[in-house]
Amino acid sequence: MLYKLDFTVEYDTSMQQQGLLGVWAEEAEAALGAKSAGVVVDLWKVVGERKVLAIVDVETPDDLDRILFDLPIMQKMGHFVQVDVKSLRRYEDFAADVKERLGRV
Image (spheres, rainbow, N blue to C red):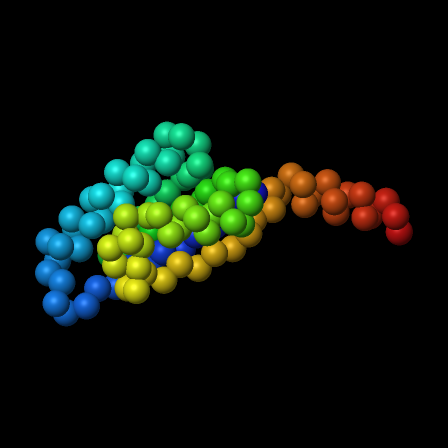
């Protein structure tokens, strides 16, 4: 199953930018490893914001939940990370469904 993940990362006033960058560097290493493994289809960093977009391909929602709990950024500062999750449908499957439905009319 494909999912679109929108990560918004905040940090509290007691954390210096260097601390945030250290956690983010660890997260980047894990994310790029997951991309090499094929779990992450692709990743983007939103320019000028503390936001990352990811498309991931996992078997079940349970797998995605486990992965999210294990991310370095979630383990170290999860209370400052908001993740918006959307399930995705391949457009080719949608187009085939539309074509079939047109034939029923």
